[in-house]
Image (cartoon, rainbow, N blue to C red; front, side, top):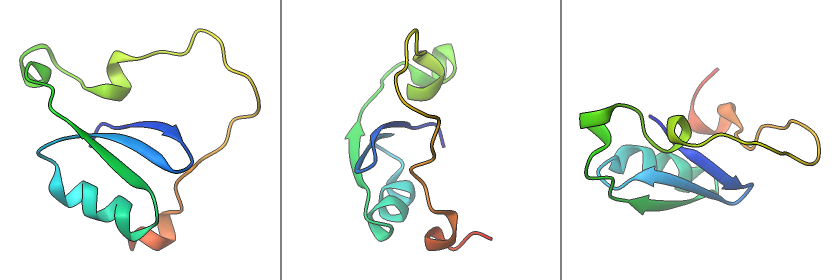
Amino acid sequence: MNVLMLDPERVLVEKGETAIHEMYRRIGITPIPVALRHANSIGGSFHCWTSDIRRRGKLESYFDWSKAGCP
């Protein structure tokens, strides 16, 4: 699972990761499926391929693990 949170309501997810799409829907986050044709050939995906150079605000998590069935 390699995703990129856009904001508290939306996340970029690999198009073929349908189980991950459903997990996000269950917790109220809209998955945006994107096909990355060459992801496996060069390694990584959305999160690995992006890096903040400037960030405003505080560090926060948009993910409530308990709603996803995780401890």
